[in-house]
Image (cartoon, rainbow, N blue to C red; front, side):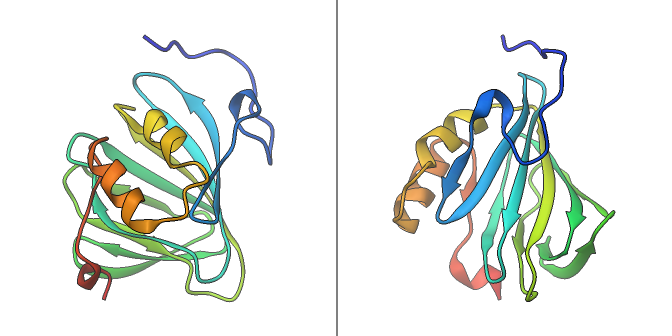
Length: 149
């Protein structure tokens, strides 16, 4: 059981000094417990995470700066700084930085399930097919590429 520790995870850093590079996108864990996994993303223009499903977790995104285009349950929506995106478990979703500026967002997923282990295994991988394969072993199921259209 992972208990929540009191304290502050400073801006621009990850909990315990940790960060992940997943297919060129930077992730910083902010809080890790059995009940919640929170992380910050810094998406450069053109970066994205394709449409996928978390069958056992609810997920939220708080956009902190910039704009994200999201494919949420088959519909395109935009989230801008200050907006909170709610994604119940089982709902297909993906996010895309289609703007010409970076986007920073805080994500949290509840419960954590296997996400920390997944991010640890995906760190510094460069093969998207391998990322998809490993993700499926950790309860994150990517949809076929046409789901991103």
